Length: 199
Image 1 (spheres, rainbow, N blue to C red):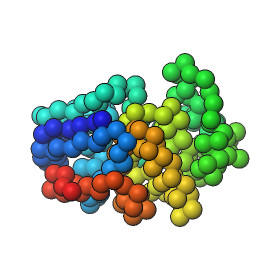
Image 2 (cartoon, one colour):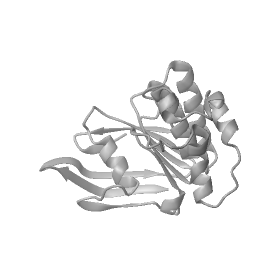
Image 3 (cartoon, helix red, strand yellow):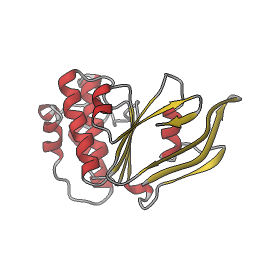
Image 4 (cartoon, rainbow, N blue to C red):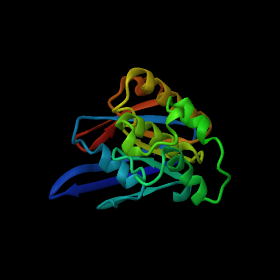
């Protein structure tokens, strides 16, 4: 579970988040929509520990931060590693057996690109590799920021299927998105507007 309680955050004197309360339970997929600049990315940054609230609190619940996977818009793939190596990296860092990487890439439609480097594939293909990297360890919590923004319809369907499966396997999943296909598989759809979450 992941939770925000009374979270406030301002940037440059502008209050972006104004007393946000939010909870996502294990096994639940929740989507977060809202206009551009409403604070969706800011809220995800607070929830994953990349930033800190001015007041209020966030907590990872029963999941430690090491069990929390993040898929930012910037993706963060290592340019010196192949796609396959990027996806395997969290497993290696955790000292776990490297398995299932090829199958996950294939499920996302990029199985034949595993030996290529990020600069050698499209941004949409990079985005799918970053999604695979985020879920390969079967995290207890997944926070994703616009994970289908650069995908065509067929690729988005595959990505949505993976996201839904992660939740069905017991993870708490929160996704900031404008994509109707993602909202369609959500257990709840929340809206961030005027600094508060509703829904």
